[in-house]
Image 1 (cartoon, rainbow, N blue to C red):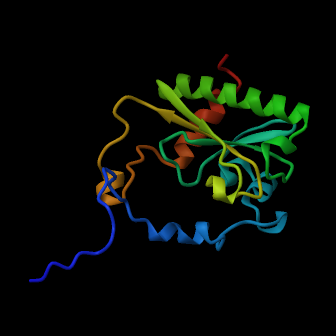
Image 2: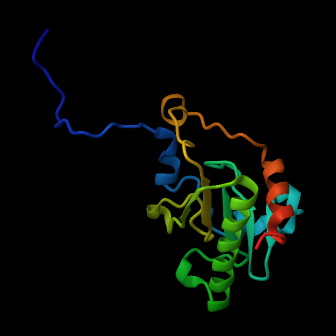
Length: 176
């Protein structure tokens, strides 16, 4: 055995290698226009088919098809715009009001004790669909994180998307 070592300085970071994400990094799977945009297509279908829980005048709320947790919602403007600064004052107000109502509803139907809210702006900001603005509302509970996503590459989702959509949609106009 020789003394050969690969270059590099050890540090305190653990590495989670995710080569499947390279398509996003290289812009290989990015939506570019309205013709291939799921957020533009969703409102043309039924609420059940598109997983829409509420339709506003300028924006709508939809379940994330690949949720981090049950009840992971997205607020989307109907208009195909990429950046938060592209919203009109009226769109911004409705966007914010829908986010607040989504949090109230998730607290009522799922007993969420916390939330992660976020908008990834642009490809370099981590947006999976950078061409159409959307905000994530991820409900959180004590102990909802565990070893499965890291060790097994698996996320345990305790309800079907259809069941969650029905619960949230039914409660939307009744929760204050």
